[in-house]
Length: 164
Image (cartoon, rainbow, N blue to C red):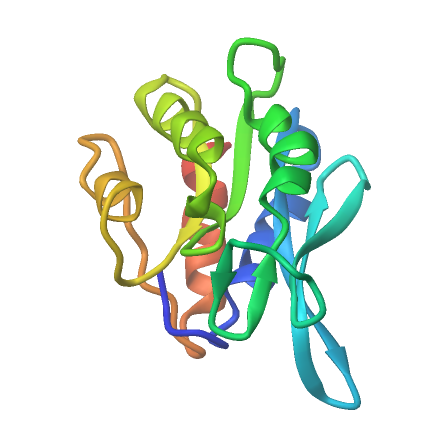
């Protein structure tokens, strides 16, 4: 957890690079910027595939603020890598569990199955929100870390140690 812009994705990627000897599956998100103006968000699977999650130019019935969200593309390309039944991953990476992602019922169901399993999950989650956003923070085995701009290094070390 952490405020927008505190470095959650950067921290997740640092953890992923330190755990490269493990079988990882999942995705991370990043902003799409043009002329230093945020235009949308991209998803990147850990296997190298990528696509658009949301963009100001997407026309969709799914909207968050000024962004149209491509739920169908997200469900087709990202949700399958979170399938605990079909994956041989040792650790799952989910960056992020937020408002846009949670518009997908398939995503919410996959997250629920992941957190109910015995597999480790590295996830970033919105600070506020109902449903699965609140639920994942209350799983008995969940260890929550609040990220700030000052504690990145310590949190990376703590999480790598827990998962090694």
